[in-house]
Length: 175
Ligand code: APR
Image (cartoon, rainbow, N blue to C red; front, side):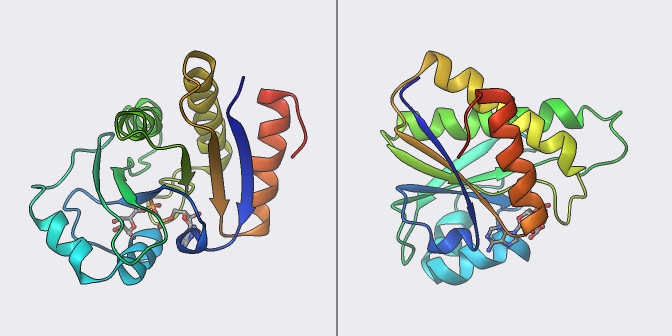
């Protein structure tokens, strides 16, 4: 496996990567949390471009420029709201990671940062979400070596440790 997996604690808008993944909503017109932080950092031109995209279905992803962000691109993906697990939430979250990585590969992105999609306002249990995220990343890096670095950026110590331990469990190495 050539792709480096990294875990950071902090604000995703400060990470120097080519693409930052946004935990957006179906309108793609901004919000709070990661969505709010990314739009604030990118500036108003991001919203102008998003307005032309016609929204995004849950589980899907769309790419825009990064504008004032360090990142060249923002990949907006819409995670599922957790309603107890009987509404295909797990598969929809997995497809957020899959579709974001596919868009990144098409855009020749070498480094990408993910937030913990759906585990904030959308209430997806983080213990389930971290497993889904890591398993999707593993599936991708086992068949693609185009992306050199995949970084997870967590906002809390608890989430950071959960992701760190999951990397060790799924990939077998400490980071
Ligand atoms: N950098 C990294 N992680 C962050 C940041 C940030 N600046 N801000 C929040 N987070 C973390 C949260 O603590 C949570 O762990 O990102 C994770 C996802 O939380 P949300 O941003 O609430 O995203 P989500 O649960 O997917 O809900 C999406 O919230 O902001 C609205 O418009 C958005 O309607 C959509 C919904």
